[in-house]
Length: 116
Length: 188
Image 1 (cartoon, one colour):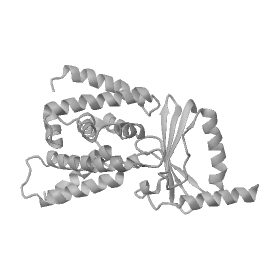
Image 2 (tube, rainbow over the protein chains, first blue to last red):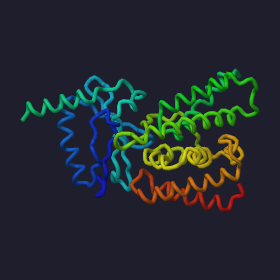
Image 3 (cartoon, helix red, strand yellow):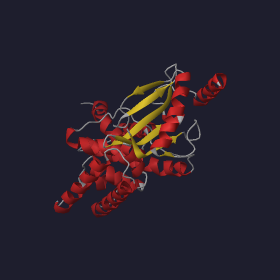
Image 4 (cartoon, chains in turn red, purple):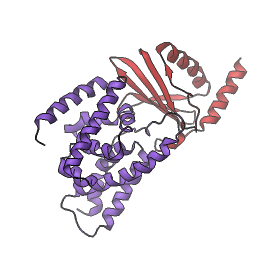
């Protein structure tokens, strides 16, 4: 499903948690996705699949339905080539009420600490 | 039809042009709003409302992009366009061009063009405007616009080759080639 040289890139604009640099390679991206999904489950985040910019994508929402980020997938030959995430709150206002991404990150960190 | 009704009918097109030049939903909305204010204040009725309003929204978008570019230079981390959930404009005859140009990969590539090149590319290659319309929209001669279109296409092609990891890239690349060969034989 992931192309061997898949790339995951985020735009937080310094206003939301985002990867410091892009994650490259199927193994690395799979590892990051695997580490993120329990965090998302821990905060009752919802992934709402939908077309974004005319391509496959999703809106990530917190438990109150507020928008955390918008994701797009570049798919070529049935494999995901690029995953882009826009989480800069300034760029999401037109999608709906925007979540407090830092608060979510803090909550996720706390949840992880409690679990460990 | 009143001016307001005419404007509402063209609003999806105007937004679609502005979004592709600006890569921002909020800035595109503002550009469309500003276009309405100018239309409302305009004392004369243009011969073609569509050509007139497209030209106004293009010129406003070029100006907005010029100042936005300065801000984007100091942007923290990777810059992506504001995500667009639904493109309000549809044209069955240009659906491939409209879809390709709105993808994140294409909008990131369009950031490599100068504001003028980008406006010409959007009007000509995406919306299929004739060069006379493009020229009057951006306030340059037709010859200059043809040059700008060639340069813009070259930038886009190089970008596509450089990053083959784009949605429907092979598709746009193939179409790009046929578009170029079509251009070579056409007198337009």
